[in-house]
Each structure stands twice: as C-alpha cells, then as structure tokens.
Amino acid sequence: MNRRSPASLSSHSNRGIFSILQNRRFLIFWIGEGLSQLGDKIYLIWTIALIANLYQAEGQPISGWVSAIMIAFTIPAVLFGTIAGVYVDRWNKKRILVHSNLVRGLLVFVVLPLLWGFQGQTLSIPLHWLPSSLRVWHSNLHETFQLPLGFLILLIFTFINSSITQFFAPAEQVTIPMIVRRRDLLGANSLFTMTMMAMAIIGFAIGEPLLHFGAKLSEIVGLSERLGEASIVGGAYLLAGAILTQLRFGEKRLFQKKKVLDIYEDIREGILYLGKNTLLRNALIQLVILFSIFAALSVLAVRIAETMPGLKAEQFGLLLAGAGTGITIGAVIIGNWGQGLDRSQMSFWGSLGIAFSLIGISVSLKSLALTLLMTVFLGGFAALVGVPMQTAIQEQTPVQLRGKIFGLQNNAVNIALSLPLALAGVAETLLGVRPVLLVLALLSLAGGLLSFIYKPDKY
Image (cartoon, rainbow, N blue to C red):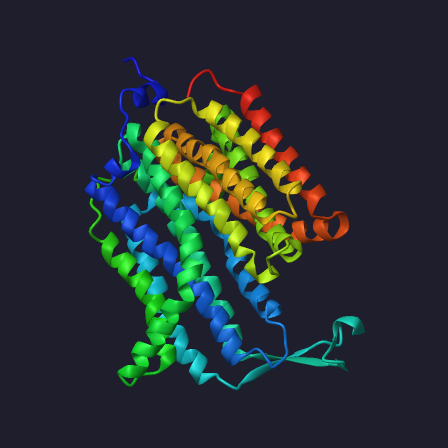
C-alpha cells in the first residue's frame, strides 16, 4: 500500500484551526485542558497569596518562600516525567485526563483544613552545620530555623500536585492524534499552543482577581474567604475533570500483551527509537532549545525591564506578554495556512527568525517600543518552530510508543526550563544582558542549522 507523507496529506486540505473546533471531541478536550492549565496558574498564585498572608514576616523578602514552592513544582518533572510516559502507554488515556484533574481539585480542599489545623506550629531545624554567613538574617546569627508546619504541608501538596501533572501532560499530547485526523494535527497543535500561551498570560493576569472574587463571594454567604479562594482553584480542576468525562474516543489497548511492567526496558525502548529516528530526534532537540531560550528570557526580562526607560522591574510581564502575543499570532497563521508547508523549512526559518529577533532585542534595550516589537517577532518565529516540531513528533511516533516518547519529551523540556532559570541570572550578572542575548541567538542558529543539515528526505 502506498503511504503518503504527512505533508502530502496536508496539501489536500486547508482546514483552519477554528474549523477544527467543529470536531466535538477536540472541542471538549480543548476546553478541558484549557481549564486545567488555568487551574495550574491560579494554584501558583494561590500558594503565593497563602505565603504572603500566613508565613512571610514583615520586611522579609518573599522570594525565598516562592523559590521553595517552585522547586517543589520542578522536582517531580525531573524525577517522574519519563516514568509517567511509560504508564501513560499502558493506562486508559481518558481516565488519566479525568482523574488527574479531579484528584488535584480535591487536594486543594484537603490542604486547606490542614493549614488551619497546623497554623502557628513550627518545626525546629538546626543550622549549626551551615557557615555562619548563611545563618545571618535580620542582622542576627541563628542556630535554628523555625519552619512553619503549614508551609511544609503546602510544599508536600505542591509536590503531589506536580507529580500528578506529570501524568496529565503526556496523556494530553498522546490524546491529540487520537481525536483528530492526521491532516488536522498541525491546526490542532496550533490551537493547543495558542491556548497554552494564552493561559500563561491571561491565567497569571486574572488569577488574583478571580481569587478576590471567590473570597468576596464566600464572605457574602458567611463562609471563610480562604474557602472561597480554594473553591476557585479546586473548582477549575474539578470543572476540567467533569468536562473531560464527556470525551469519547475508541482507545485500542495495544499494550495488553505486556503482562510484566519493566519500566527501564520501556524507557530504553523509547530512547532507542529516538536514536534511530532522525526526524523525531531533531524535532525534540529543537523544542528543547526553544524552551531553553524562553526560560532564560523569563529571567532576563526582569533585568531588561529594570533598565528600560519607562518600565519597572515588576513590569517585566509586559515583555513576556509581547512574546506570548507573537506566539498566538504565529500559531493562528500556521494553523490556517501552514498545512502544505515543509516542517523542516518552517523550523529552519523560525530558528533564524528567533536569532535575529534576539539580536534585535540586544540592540534596542533603550527603546521600549522597539523591544516590544522584537519580542512579538520573537514569539511569532517561536511558533514557527514549536508548532510544526510538536506536530512532527505526533506524526512520527508509533501509537504504542507515544507515552514513552512524550514522557521523554516532557522530561527533557522540564530540564530545559529548569537549567536556564538557574544559569541565566548568573550569566547576566557576570556578562550583562546583551552578551547573554547573543549567546541565545547563537544557540537558536545552531538549532536551525541542525534542522537544515540533518533534514530527512520527507516529512
């Protein structure tokens, strides 16, 4: 039988991203995953609000508390990302999507009474083993640190929340090619990317007002403001889970013959397949480079805003919003008119565009308007890399390996997000903003050249 390449299949159809919403299964999935992502953003804002109200001392920076929460979010991604993909291949995808949201929603209502119950109680942690320079704060030398038990509970539940998310993320990616036709994958991923970026921007923007609304509504009916805030966070997850229960798709249990679960053998199988499939490997490398660049930019944006005439450090979100706007515009264009285009060519020109946009930002650091324009271009070119490469991974991965491959991708991307967060600030302090931006531009160029040199015969 003559199998046509994805590109040739695409060329016979020019379905835009909004026509894909006529697919009822994808519409249900899209609404559910959007609410789930919104819940993730509001959860983070909620934990920061709890820290500010319950644990942060007067005059004490909140950054240390928030860093601990972010670490609790990140560790499960590194530890369980790949392993979760193995189980996703073996478990029912719909149940993972539904149960992961329902459990996360219920956990929010479990943690609240525990915080109340342990309020005011602390765990004494000895510090004598630390250098004296690290034991000095508020001009006093401390022998112990009194860790609030409530904050420890919040860390544990955040760790659990993130661990559950590691199963939801690959199940999300595996589900898309199961509910849309192959010719619609590019449009579906464009819409998925657009929604993800919109929630990253809008979620953080409306999170605090939504929590305030929940607190006021709860107060009106005579309940605790904290319960009202928790209802907004948990409600987003529970509503996502309830909507996803309506998702219907025939899932073939291709893995039933494997009676013994060998996690490491399954992971090895996925890694070996990545090693043999040049297209898949290059697509994953491109995504890792892309996420590394954006992780570094999220740190550099604070310094750029601090030194930018007319901006303050806390207004760095404006620069990230510019990039998010560009990604949204790019995703819409690709989803509507990119079906017949060569995936590797889009990635190549997208990588070059990212590099030139970063160079543009480096030479326009004193102009707010020009910098914002460059960030919009940066986001648009990023979509030109991210959307087709994610689509290529879905197209090229066999059904029985999708969970493993997306688990590996999830793990690689989370590491790519974590390391630059740690290194970018140090590099900026030592070298300055402009040299770091140029290094990121070179990294993007390297990714583009990789895509060009090792271009497969067909997509």
